[in-house]
Image 1 (cartoon, rainbow, N blue to C red):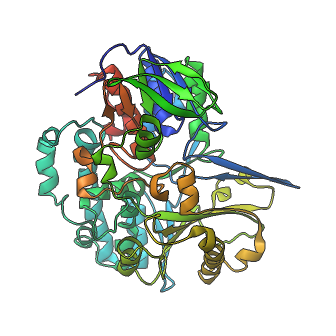
Image 2: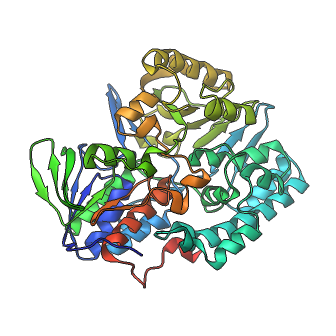
Image 3: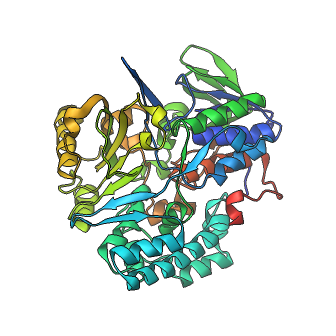
Length: 504
């Protein structure tokens, strides 16, 4: 494994997102002096927070991810500084993980307990489908075991690094076939196919184009479980930053880095918008990878310019007086169309005519996130990224109204009239927040943008990248691992390290 060259005593981490925090905690635990520079006034990056005050209290919204899986990876970071995650963060399991609504009126609750899920599938669909589900769990559990150590939780410098016995095992169980057909080998009903393959969207692909290895995402939530932190998702970066600060990491908020000073192939300092020059032995960059290259290094290699990006999303945050008894914490409302809407979204780059949508109701799990008697809703509609010819300055208000109409058609009666406060994020807004092509899920995980073909995390002598744009990829678990992999580029691999997540 390649590591940075030269001294590594002082590491400057640009960005206090989850990946940057993960790297900072590990570097501090390894004895480095760490300075974290963050342009916002609090940690979190994409896992941000929006508070809106009203007369009777405050609506507290997460502005980024709402689905937390694999909390063992958070615990790993706390372990590195000698802390117990449970002393800093309260996590509660979400049950059901998801509530899935289908256009035929059927409802399927998704549970992590295999017996409970099999019983639910038997009740809604039938015993043969339940038996197929049990075989599917065996398949994705093997995927996880084969992928985690050799392909996910590991720095990869070359395709030859993949030549391990687990590669053959993955091929042997069909990991390199397409995802949706692989799911159908076990479960034949379109309802189960959808709920166990929609996770391909996190990888930026249609379930019909994604490789079956990405069923590991389904393992991470539908088998390993989904959790919710008390105080919302933003509580995670807050806790990580607090623990890191306790152990010597210096945080400087409201500090925007404008460039990395490079001499030859070596970074020697970063420059801030306030005119300050901060010397560094190593620079770790957490901004979106193409933005970090272009805006901070002034250099965009071909491997980055060639990238294609995941679809984007339209996000409506709503503080509401309405509560719907049918909802769970996470709710997926599938449209009648399935394969066709992915063609619209990804190939034709137009808005879905019959969207499948995610509605999260976090105040159901933590009422303190809203004023007494009120609710918050996180409504996500997939959309094309900014490669599509859509002017969101014009389209945004119209599409907001369409989102509300669709919600009301899907059973959220009176949703629009019950909204007391709201905030809208369009693909253009995502781009203005530093996400290339307005794609919060970064570059798509096509075959040539996966593993060793994804842009690497080491540049020059001492610049390291972390976050969803580099290895291993997108999603909260992956960016937490990305932080650890970035730290290893500085410290070298710890032969005694074994993730809690690998002990399953």
